[in-house]
Image 1 (cartoon, helix red, strand yellow):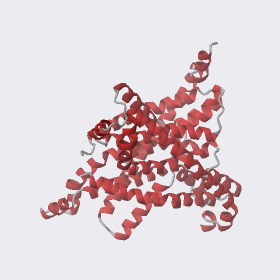
Image 2: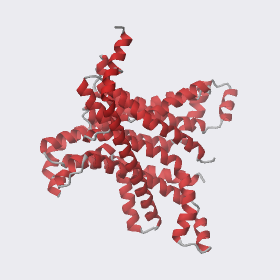
Image 3: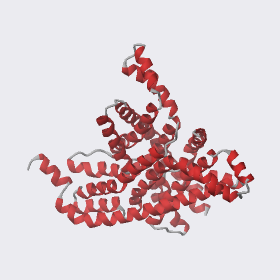
Image 4: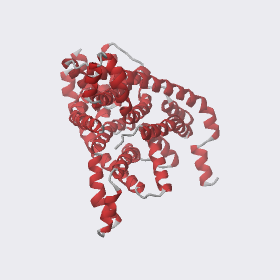
Length: 226
Length: 221
């Protein structure tokens, strides 16, 4: 066997790959479930916090700023470990899936609140005053005048962050979530062959590369004009 | 509650091990941040060669690592390479993975910075007799770095946070040591302490960044 054949046999072993393909596929389903949950709940929570912050209630804003800062400065893996290994001592035992989901959703909430808020504040004050003076309510001004402009402005930084945080679903493997990396790692130790890991890596690319390319397009489309 | 999550005796007992973890996290950051910056600079300098083939290759490289979770890269190196007869330690794997992953992110930032400097400046520099490299290092890069400083800082924050991945491949950094202390004491206090340390260490940077970002976004209009 030549070196190249030996390399293929080790890292791209057809038999092993075929055997563990169903595991990797089921891992992909879990990763997609996690990713969708994180993106929806994280962005919704982030936008809600930004909207609450626009009401300008002082003590509430301080609290929001503190929460945002907290989840921006803690590494996601630390939050996951704290939830999964720490909370049970307090009598609450979230599963690995729930720990990963909540942790990453909180992180995305913090980052997106910051971005949404920057978008809202970037809309000129005069626009608020103009809309209010034409008889629109606070809510109507927010929904019909400010947010459409603010959201457009937030798209490039937001897509970037969302992808970076969603990729973090791989961290779930540390707390025994059976997502792609988890499935691939256990397949490697069962088969004593690294091919499942290569499959897992390919699976991530299949899932995330289109999103990254799409994000690049969105970024160019919504790029800030100089 | 305090006895469980913030037990003073456990804090005292696990202090040395947690502190050694903190020291390693700082050392690790001091190694991987320059490594990533270096990788990013190489990428951005490569992309400044305005040849479509070079640009597309580098863009593909950057997109690849933007799509690839850093933990997967790390595990691939740590658990995959030994099958090729190459047994690197956890620390070396972290260094290589960070060089590749964060290098791609830094590269994208540097590239944006270099693009933000008008071409006329390079032409002016070149016409005064500076070489291409001199024009790059003396005229373009200083301005480029200043233009993207918030992004560079923000990515550096992410890199420092990312060093916690080292715990997965047994690098004795802050999170790893805290987990060790937790399993020795059967008490979650060490992890809480580690989280507090991360927060206190990185909070000033987060504050600074949120100011810079707000200003940048508001100024774009």
